[in-house]
Amino acid sequence: MDFDRITAMLENAFWSTGIKKPEVIKGAQNSALLVGGFNEENNQIAYSRVISDKTRFAYILDVYVDENYRKQGIGQAMIRHILSNPELSDVYQWALITKDAHGVYQKVGFYPLLHPNNWMQLRFDRPMR
Image (cartoon, rainbow, N blue to C red; front, side, top):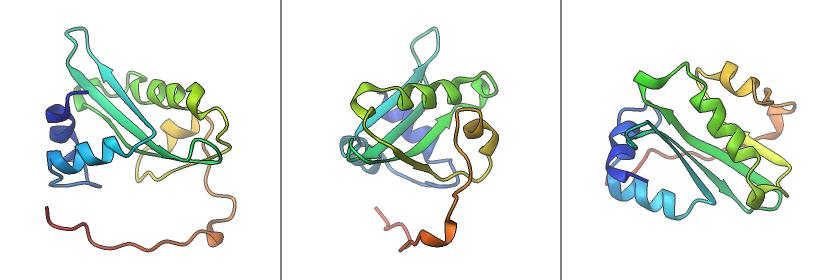
């Protein structure tokens, strides 16, 4: 993984504006799976990761495809790769959050929460790093 490139992509994403490389690396190190997409010149053009206990639950996050490579099925290919990964084959509860890519995820089987009122969250502002 090219963490300089990943940081450049994620620091402009609305969910991680201003993120710095140490935070990107720490998140990657503590993830169950990292997936990257690369162009013909082997430059990183996409990234995603999974947080999981590898048994019951997995959360997909930081799914990002470079603007110049969007609408080519790269995001869907990364999600299919994640869902078929042998290390995550026991997982039966998958979650993700999206603001604007519902169609991408629906094409690979995701759907809105059946019981959204059962979910709870505790959220703080991202610390300055």
